[in-house]
Image (tube, rainbow, N blue to C red; front, side, top):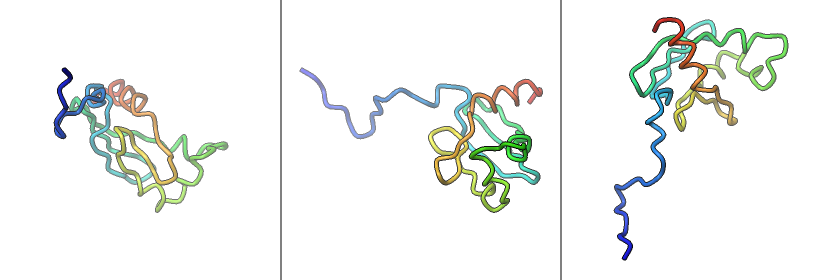
Length: 100
C-alpha cells in the first residue's frame, strides 16, 4: 500500500543541492550584482559587458537602470520581469575563478 505524502514532504528533486543555486542577489552600481549561492559562495558579477555590448539582444532593456534594479531570485536564478534570467552556474564559476 502506498503511503500518502504529507503536505510538508517535498518529493521533487532538491534544486538547492546544486552549489550554484542562487539564494540572494543585491543590485550594485555599474551593472554589477552581488550574488550569494546555496553553498555560501558569494561575490560580485559584472554584467555590463553583456548589457552594453553592441548586440545585447534581450538584455538591451536592462540598460535602463530602473529595469536592471528589478533583479530578483526566482527558482535559484537571478531574474527580471519578462522571463529574463542569467545562468547561475556561469555566475558561480566566474566568482569561484576570481577567488571569492
